[in-house]
Amino acid sequence: MQAEYARIPYANAGLVKLPNEVDDDQAIMISDIFPTAYFGAELAEIEDGDTVAVFGCGPVGQFVIASAKLLGAGRILAIDTIPSRLEMAQAQGAEIIDFNKEDPIEAIQSLTGGIGVDRAIDAVGVDAVAPNSGPAAEKALNQVEQFQQELQKIAPETNPQNGNWHPGNAPSQALEWAVQGLAKAGTLSIIGVYPLTHKSFPIGMAMNKNLTLKMGNCNHRKYIPHIVDIVHSGVVDPKKILTQVEPLTNVIDAYKAFDQRKPGWVKVELKPGANSSSQNPQAQNPQSQVKVG
Image (cartoon, rainbow, N blue to C red):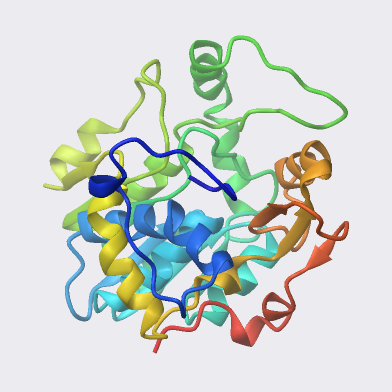
């Protein structure tokens, strides 16, 4: 729940009391995206020294990187194409791969000596996009028909409005890259959202690699007390993912800007009385993003 006031049935069982030192901006990150990311990192079975690939560097992906570090990952490879998101991932210590500049699977193979990563986490889901430039774009052309068929089943009706509300054009792209990038006997964690109508998955390659697959929706209540402790101790400041604060009256414009992946728009807070297009000063310096001690 992200509201100023709310009536909560069974509040004695469902709510978690926050320490006074955890402010509201930190708390709204703890309610959903941080627990989801930690859940995804835990599903990936990360062990000390593991090399982890994170597909998608949006808000959840950023917290996946932070969570992977907390669980002992030795190296983290972050795959995306939006510069501001890659910069934020790099500031956390991740090695970044822009899939519109290099083939992500070739890059993963090169960075791991041809072995692949121990763990992969899909933080993208069905809204994935195919590369439109670089060496990976040519390979994506061979899958255009497959992706279009998937889209017809998943999103037969779209509502484009001046560049907004377009679904991703490659629903299974992140899944395919994740399976291709994993080493034998690796683990794939899926926390990106897929609808019931999505049925495309490279099961043959996963089976022949002896991969472990784990996925699902997060039980946020289970993880929130632990996440609160992490934030309260100062190990992670989730507020540094917050890049924009917009007035509640600008809700449609804010959603449009986020949908278009405008530079610098990673996570947006809608706040009554806020000034239009205000930015979180903590998110301006890339070196200060989501500090993990």
